Image 1 (cartoon, rainbow, N blue to C red):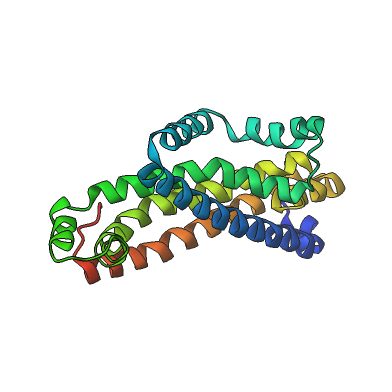
Image 2 (tube, helix red, strand yellow):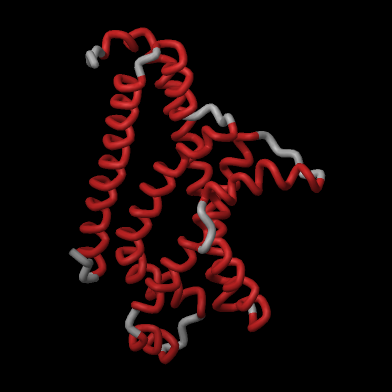
Length: 224
């Protein structure tokens, strides 16, 4: 089989538009997952026993499901109950619903890793709960959060390729269209793999920079 990238040379704009769609979907999904994760964290820590149990049940259910199953439920099952949403919104919500509990678990683990003595010292000098969270917990927890959150961001980017199965116009959907026109799957998916690798590498190395800066600034020992 001959490998010739020239057969897809005229399809660069179409692939670029698809990748642009992927970036927007991932940014929106990551933002919504982050907000949901914070809400779940607050609910578990401050919401009382009943809310905490409901959140844990939701978390266990979500973490036990493949993303593709959740995507099918959102896209094919909800319309049976009269909930009709555009495919891009379904994809974004699915990413947020799936990754929100992961974000919450990461936040809870980072908070638990903050030395209890520093929090007790804040209470002893009369700091408010908000001030303790902002000035004691957050600076120590954030450097611990970043490595795992980076992995979640990379996972979300890669999982966004599954949205093509519900015809969301993202990178993989654009790639499939190019393949159907060029009959050159080797060349097209080689480019797709290269772009995904480059994007995940950018996320990894850029966040590593901030991990080191935050770790040095707040004296937090980061995992190697």
